Length: 183
Image (tube, helix red, strand yellow):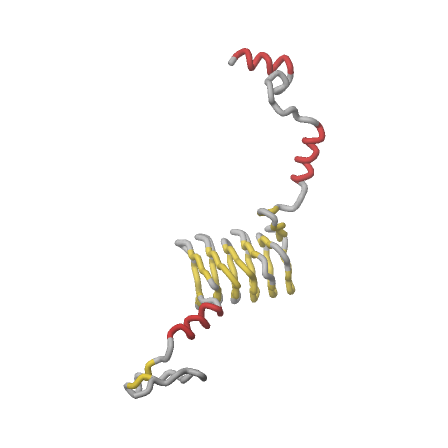
């Protein structure tokens, strides 16, 4: 072990160790360039409204948006909205996904998933295909967790509904071309 340390000190970081990739100035520049790019999650680029910023109006975005400051207006996107712990959003929201840690005042319509984390405060109605609520979340409003496709599929799969007022079941409608059993 001491031989390795002596070799490192005398010959430079890793230069005496076989198969050790040497760092060049070009590699350092690539790393610095990546640090200056927008924050991203996978291939999604994230736009940020910082804690000291406030924005009013209609907002559309493509990939993802993080709000740590204030926003008042309307948000419409197929992307992902993230409301940070310091975020305050007063808006009608129509997005693909939303994660809330801060405060949202307004109705939220989500194509896929709403995730309310433990520090979230929600004042408004929620409509989504999926909903995750952590312990400690405050919600004042109605939650509807059904996608349109699921609701339509459930209606068609059930078949005829019984008519409880009359005590009789409705007869299923005859299909064209269906054979009628003979007696």
